[in-house]
Image 1 (tube, rainbow, N blue to C red):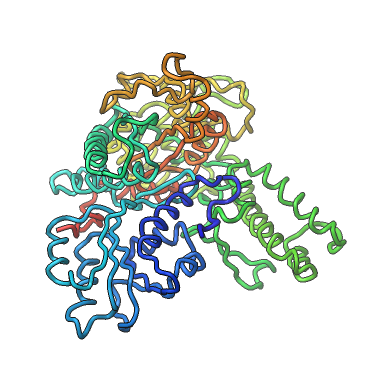
Image 2: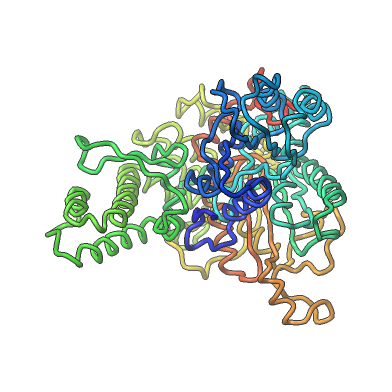
Length: 604
């Protein structure tokens, strides 16, 4: 029984559903026996992976009676068989071996071992010599990424940002190790999607993308060579674009006013969990998880905050009109009463209350200080004001923000960065003045360290470049404070329309002859009926950003998929960014880091 974790809008083929189906087929169905219950043993990585796509009820349906951690001491259950779903690391394999030290002290009747990806020979041989008698199955299932949303994945390696961009890591081989690990994880994504895409990369400003693209291409070739079950031998009609984070610095620091991006930027949402009170400050604290099982969240997460504030009260009034349970103004305390009076609508109303609470909390921050910031940020980012007039003096636009005491240092730093990005760098003298006047000396590396991402920060006045040309979107309807479009959206559209410059976006491999994401393939290559059939199976554009993606970039994948029915866009990264977290990470780039958590470090 697959979980309903994907939500109505994402369809049956969302990443979460796809990963669950693969785990069900490769693990649970593989060792199933009627009326036989088993225990499943996980490590930290697989615990997170399994919980990203399934729930305890799904495990129960698969005959799993208990979930245990391989690292922890556990009570023996010698009459039961155990499934070990673990990463092929020294720590996890040692945990498995310790459970079967001798026949008399074995914790379980037998072990069914499933690794997330390739197990090195040294670790495999160690396991074989220690406890082969207990192992009934041992397989590599090739899923070592996390489905975050129906069209979004992460590798969950936030330290990759430091490893790939810090000047202090180059000497320590840390970068090579993390690149290898990321390439293997990306290949497991392609394998799960049953794709062998043409791999392309953005050639500038740094060489991380080209290095990772080469690794992925080589590992894809090897994977499909040795995977006997796969029908895929050549390239499929899909593309994988690999990009360095510095390709669009603007989208990482701009204040976004679409619901999901705004909430994660302005509110203390941790691990997708929002804490709130329904009856004012004296009320009981509640928690809500923002996930795709919540159909209302899926429906409104990419909408502008103004539309959300209009939509939720309408939905609430529909519910309350079924019984005239509330009088007068629709407030959160009235809604709490409504829940008590109408228990059969509790779940529906609770979701709406949560999102109204989030929207009102966002608007409270917006009205107090963000509104004025947004106008400045949009003008700096686009180089034009809301009327389309060119901004002649960016410093004049910036100064009111820096002089406003209501803005904290993070907001001022974000505005300074947008000023620097808009002019493709500034002079050392100008930068020093800005840092001193705003009194952000201790945080100045949040600005200076962008140079390690290949973004111009300090330049001589003569070498200032022109801003990059962008797609004309003046005919699109937008709110005045939300005129900026992430650069990645231009890239996605150009890739689907086959308009990416091959010098700027080289292929690692030969371009598949039939790739044309728009479906405008020549009659010789395909008949119309076969093209429509192919669309059902889905040509895909996979975009991977080294060093984090923003919520606005995630939104772009859904918008482009919606606009171009011929191609599904899947976006992923090492991790997901919020502006504040990114600035903290940028600040650390020039600091020595003694230990960096690398997923592959234990594969000895």
